[in-house]
Length: 392
Image (tube, rainbow, N blue to C red; front, side, top):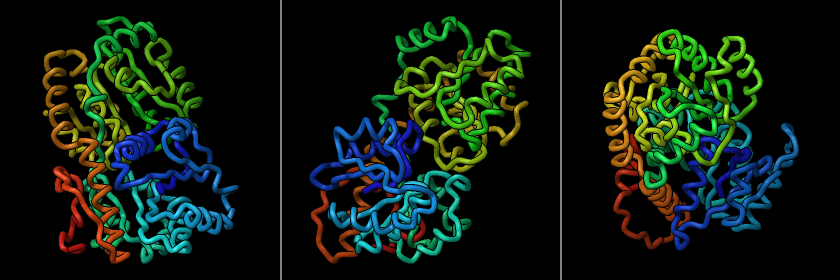
């Protein structure tokens, strides 16, 4: 069972949807538990797999550990994977231990807030079999900053469906018509939940600066969240109403990305954001803040450009450069898709989770599991990325 808060449309949640759909049903039977409501993606999944919701009543609902214990026992759960930090990481692991679940793992998807691991969660390190990192630098961060034991940190790089995320000329035209953006207008965009750590203020400041050099530029903000009302006010204050389009959440991310000429991410902190991989897979060059492990996908001058966090001037400079150079955009976009296809496949990620779950379960229960050949497993999971002999 994967345990998380809820399943709105977001990077980690979409990643989980793709993962559970890809598992070999003869080897892994996934279930999902949401401490709060299922939300959009949970409702979408519940016709395919079992999804539980409303497992916690309020912030100080200490009875949740017992509730989870009963659920894990009733469903005969062999492994619990908590997704993200906070309440679900604490109560999920505690409930799993009380239910004698053989395998307890925690998957984290960013560095620092909101996935920073607090003191209470560190107290449960001893009962945790492994912490899953999504990129090499993210794994190093978990050891050096979060102080997890090296032998308990496992690297499983994020992966996306590169068959789904391809450039779509027809969708590009349809989305531009829908937003009343001309076919030849230069467009920069972002796909991210409207939360503080994504720093959309930087995106808007860079948009204002870019318009001083290119008055035809348009800017698309896809995603929703608690910051939306405030950010719309900021856009009005900067007189960007006619150039910035808030389109909310949508399932057609490939189409939205195809509408853009360049993709940008302006976060304060990240680990290995799926949105960047999706953009590169759609042949969109990326300009991003240089945080987390983003430099493992955004290769400077090859698939895009990196700027220092908070540097609106440099961000706008790179946007202006790319929006005015179609040939350069094409070169970076082609290289970006090639990089993602070779290094960030969904199957590699699925093989990594399957291998980690089966191996850990076999070790904890002393049972032998028939493990099929995993042609991409060596690229998907390093068991362990710091000490390869830890599970030998």
